[in-house]
Length: 140
Image 1 (tube, rainbow, N blue to C red):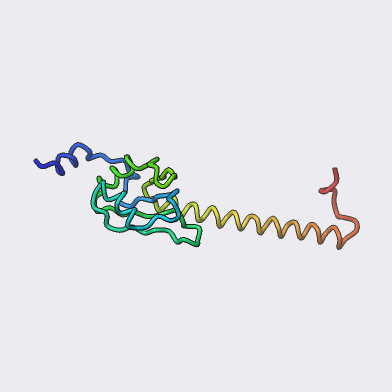
Image 2 (image 1 turned 90 degrees about the horizontal axis):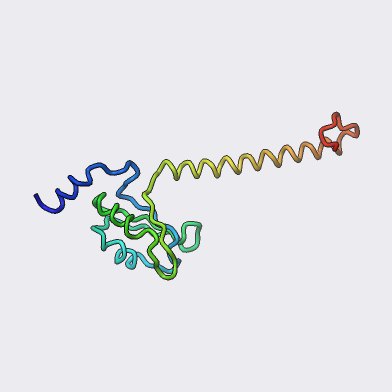
């Protein structure tokens, strides 16, 4: 039995969140893809690295895709909290459901803010439009 197969036998039960795709946050803004390959390549064969845009909200982030799930696990275990350029890396397993939930939450927050603005505008219109007020909602 070689090293690879024995490793898979001993670690056959990985947690469900373990994934070949890693999401890396808190990267130095000036880091290059080559530097990331050097850092993450020490833990196994890297299939792809996607670095966030320099000018958008995704700067300082990257996706690192490993060819083997056990290499990705080793990278998370060793590189979370690793200091690169004076910043401590946050290395997480990519979980599409969580990313979608975050996007949905942001959309709902914007929707709620818009509804609050509309309600406030209606209350202002009701106050100025009818002198009697129609109720005692705003009185203390």
